[in-house]
Image (cartoon, rainbow, N blue to C red):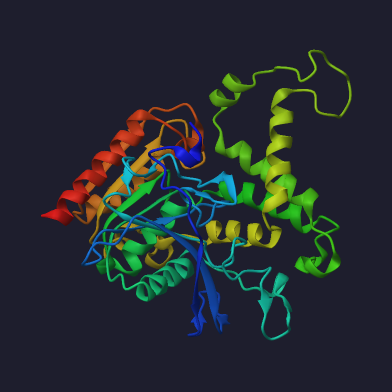
Length: 382
């Protein structure tokens, strides 16, 4: 069925812009004099605005969480399979908000935006931002929308880190945190993958120190390699074997350095798509935000102390074949929450897809999320 006529689609959506003129002090020590955030909403706020759900996005996503654009029906929201009328996050009952994070490249102020001090794109001069900075700006957007408290804040991967940070920074402003495919900080291996990706971009001759906007060029080669590296970490070995194995692209070996295996063709295709729409300076900053996230660091590495302010109820979900943010990392979060006697529901789902499982269709996973939101809806209605 075409997305534009699908009964469970939120339908055509329109992105919005929120402007903020109050200076924003960032964790890195820099201050932004003003900024914009691109966002979308699906569903309607109830009378007391108690049914709002914030969805935080991961590395290469945006505020376009569900539905499609009237002038581009093929551009479907990245979590459309979970959000909509009658879906696990039911927009008949909840008002869902998606925000493009500060430093992004989909409408929010970022490196490609004009620096008011120079009249030119920020480029490399745009400051580094953190998960905590994103949460601060999301709270500012909530203030502008008149939302004092979210029924829930939800995210997967880097988006889940934001949901977790919300429970620490603004514990009184959310009732539930849905934390999916997450880790309380990155392992050394994960930081290493991010650094290889960044070096691919930074060493691209077309990078120009981050000021490539005025050079009529883009560091496409570096961004392609960065995407390939990242994409390998999102899939499990079993999923790669199942999808591609050692299948040959042309049915025989050609003894060249061109694309010969189907997995090479797949990675090349994903890299081409990504490099066509994503901004390299944004990629650098988002991977750094991932590296920097570590709420326990301010507490001597004690995650239980870091999560002590949290008062929300939690749904934490992990996937067995996710080796980037393994179930063991989710269990660290669970232990810290239980140490603080917080209400926690935990599910470890046996799924073959690796880290990307949080984006895909799985009846058990979607059923779990739907049941949890049914519980939240009952609380709101009580």
